[in-house]
Amino acid sequence: MKKTIFLAAGLLFSVSAQSQILDIIKSTVKNQTGVDLNNPKTTTITPPVNTQQTPTKNTSPINLGSLTSTQISSGLKEALNLGVTEGVKKLGVTDGFLKNEAVKILMPEKLRVIDTKLRAFGLGSLADQGVKLLNRAAEDAVTESAPIFTKAITSMTITDAKNILLGGDNAATNYLQGKTQSQLFTAFQPKVKASLGKVGADKVWTNLISKYNTLTGQAVSTDLNEYVTNETINGVFKMVAEKESGIRNNSVMRTTSILQKVFGAQDGK
Image (cartoon, rainbow, N blue to C red; front, side):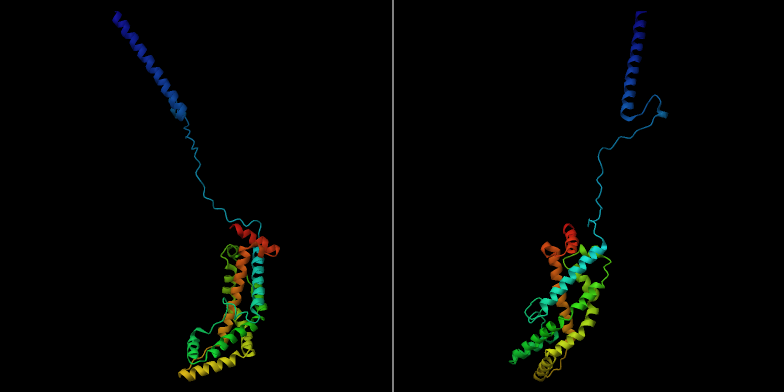
């Protein structure tokens, strides 16, 4: 009889202990997951909160402040106009081309053999005179080129003004040259032809080539007008590029408010 009583008490204790353990498990599950094991069908499971923020990629555009495309265009055109004005002033004087190694016009490449041959025959002074007069013609003609360049700059449409502003040191100059080289050549060629005649370059070169042909038995010729026109235009663009680079990289050279505002914005690109 006593054994039966002890066995029943043990069973009751065991069931009670198991019940308590089960209650603890249910409580723990509910606290950590939100799941109520007593009523699982009506329980809403709340997913754990991710406290780590996913980094976002910065795709914001380069900030040019309040600059408008019109202002950027105006600033670029002013820089180009300054480059042309100063470039023409420096080039359009005696030795402006001849003593400036960056723009000096050399003998046309296909005629450089003439230079070697003439010097071999003791006619180096004639070759030197020919090169000198090519540069004198450029120095004379370039003084009349400013309005042609200015017109090209004024009529230029910069649809990608911001890209040009944020481009390389000579981005605006390169853009202008690519868009206007052929038009400038057509407008400027008659002025170069007149200057070649004015300084006597055409006669000297006729004599020079004639002597070379006589000495060598060959027949060479070249279009000096086309050659000097291209070299003169390229010389001006080199000066414009130099000015543009200076304005971009040296705030002291930004002598107007629009230059300060536009190129000041690109400093932090």
